[in-house]
Length: 424
Ligand code: GDP
Ligand code: IMO
Ligand code: MG
Image 1: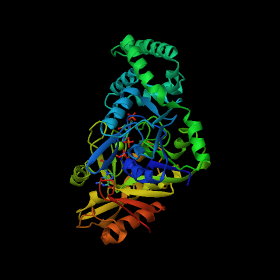
Image 2: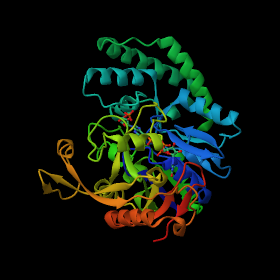
Image 3: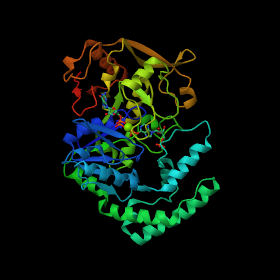
Image 4: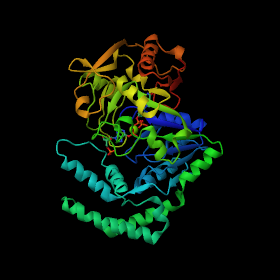
C-alpha cells in the first residue's frame, strides 16, 4: 500500500484528522495536498486537544515526516503560530517539509475575501475569510508568490512589494482599506526567512519515498461536496479536495494511489451556505449540534446538521474511487429513539437517478428516508463489533448496503482510541 488518500465524503469536519492520526501509525509521510488554514483538524490525545490548520495531522507521531505539498496555499503567520503552539506543548515541528511550489497567502487575499463576501449581499458563500479563494485565483491568473520565492530574499521583497501595490489599487477601488505596503514587505521578509529552512522540492522527496518503499498518507482538507468542480458550486471552496486533487496537489501520479478512505459522520453537517437536502431545522437538528459539539474549529460558527445522506456518499464513491469508509461520531446518535438514513432523492414526487448536477435541482430534492430503531446505550466503550447493540450494527449494515463499499473504522468518541475496526 504505497499511497493512501483520506478524503472527506461530505461537507467537511467529518473527523478526518482523527482517522489520519489513527492511520499515521503505519505511514512515514503525512501530506496535506490542498486547501489552507480554512481547515480545522482536531485530534484528542489523553484529553489534550490539538486543532491543526496547516500542519499535517500526523505531526503528533515522532516517526512521521509531515509535508505541506504543492497544492496547498500557505498563510505564514498561521503556520508559525501553529508551529510555536505545538512546540510549546512538546511537539517538535523540525521535520516539517514545505513545497517550493506551494502558493503563499498575503493580507490582500483576506481583504479580497471580505470584499467579495460583502458584495454578495444576502447571498454570501459563508467563507472562512482566510483568503483561500483569492489566493487560488492569483495562482490561476499566474501572479501568485510561492514558497520557493523566499529563497531569493531580495527578489521576494520585490515581489511582495509589487503585488501589494497592485492589489492596493483594487482594494481601494472596491472601497476597502489599503494595506501598509512597507509593513507587509518587512513582516513577510521576516516570515520568509523563517520559512526558508523548511522549503524543499516535495515532488522529488515524495517520489524518492515511494521508490524507497515508504508508505505515504495524503491528508485531504475540506471535502468532496466543497470541491471546486464537484461540490455544490458556488457554495464550495476553491481547491479540489477530491482524490484527483491529491495527485495534482502532490505530483504523485494516480496509479500510485491504491487506497482511498472516505470519511463520513453518522449524520451530516455543513458550515456556510448552500443546499443541504437532509438538513434538520427542528429539535433533532439542535440535538445533533449540541451532542456532536458542531461548532467550527476555525471560525466557531454553529454548523448546520441533518441525517446521514447515502445519495451523497454514493456519489463520493464515484468521484473519489473510494475503497472504504470510516464512519465517525456514531456515538452522537446514542439515545435517539429512532434515526433516519437518506437512501434516495425525489423531485416533484419522481425518484432522481444519481446525484443532481445543478444546485437549483439539489435545493428542490425531497429525501427518501429509511427509519432505523435507535439504541438506548452509550457506544463510547465499544471496541469490538460484537460490543455494539444490534441497532447500531444494523445502522452500519444499511450504510454499507446503500453506499456499496465496506465500513472499516467506526468512531465512538473524540479520543484517539475511541474507535473500533468493523469487519463485515
Ligand atoms: P476534520 O476537519 O474532518 O478533521 O474534523 P474536525 O476536527 O473539524 O471535527 C470533528 C470533531 O469531531 C472534532 O471535534 C473531533 O474531536 C470529533 N470527533 C472525531 N471523531 C469522533 C467520534 O467518533 N465521536 C465523537 N463524539 N467525536 C469525534
Ligand atoms: P475541514 O478540513 C467545513 C467551507 C466554508 C464555506 C466554504 C468556502 O476542517 O473539513 P473558504 O474559506 O474555503 O473559501 O470557504 O467552504 N469550508 C469548510 N467547511 N470544514 C472545512 O475544513 C472547511 N473549509 C472551508 O465554511 O462554506
Ligand atoms: Mg474541520
